[in-house]
Image (cartoon, rainbow, N blue to C red; front, side, top):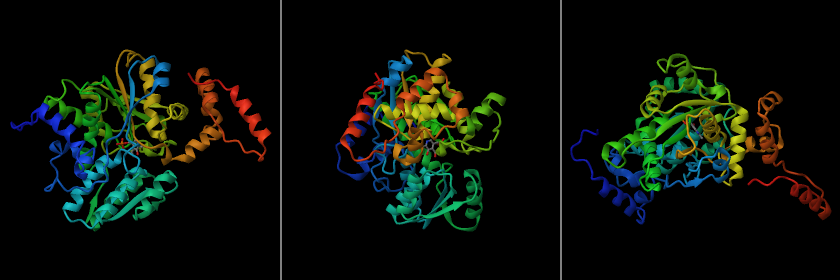
Length: 418
Ligand SMILES: Cc1ncc(COP(=O)(O)O)c(C=O)c1O
């Protein structure tokens, strides 16, 4: 329980949060600061650095739901409505507000791309200088372009994400820079508000399962904190199971849980095309293990082929997401197939990034050049058939109406997704 005996009244909180939705004040329009009663991190909470983050939509996924035989399957899309297109904004508004209030001049992070995009935007907004350390050649173009657009000093180091983290910690010993990596505790404070928003959107009903993609492993833990706080305050009567889905090539949490029950982290040399979760030595490993154990969730791993298929399926629902986010749907299929999630249970996938973050991945998938032969050979027959239905390569044509009609006729022979 939260030790404070002056707990806010749950009914009053619900009313207040709802009431703020109609306000024109920036602090109320933010989907993070609207919940500021549970975010006691600023001296002047009325004046945060906000870009009106949060307020992210909750979509149904009718086709995936039907294919899996699950009645209740929703996706909370944190890549949509958040100003830089990923869930990182909900944590960044909190941590950057602290940096600004403490009068730091410089902020910095190591990143697989989304943190740097978010930090650069909020730093620019607050008039702070920002430095991003990213692995050269290993982040998606959309994200790289954002940190430049928002004026960050963008350093592409010839190493991986874990190497960037090492250099950043050396840098921090030499200069008075405020660290905005996910170990910054205020980022988790901001990110936990997505749990409040989700449950509010569900009219205070708690789903049985929430699935998140896992990289540095901070997000699942932050959501877990949010759900626990709601339980402690009497806003909900239980918490959902939180499961973390990793790419097979970047699976330190999965391996550690399999091999030693999560007692000790087994770092890996990370390799996956889902660049946001290409992390081998996750900083929030302990918190993630504790979240999974305390909520009764699981960690599952998914292949490159499974991620690509799930991403195309989410795209075909008219929603789209970045590859890391699609790991959740791929993981859900495995959890359902193994009976760990049953068909009558209510499931929410957390989609963490916008599809336009990594258009190269999507284009390569539809052109048929993303997955290699071995990866395609690993697909089961029904998945291969689904790839064929979903892949829509662009067609280059002479400017001739008969050629266009010919293509339309051939498209009419494609099966239509039910
Ligand atoms: C789009 C996206 N999804 C998932 C993750 C993983 O989140 P976490 O590092 O908190 O596990 C990240 C982290 O960069 C991300 O950018």
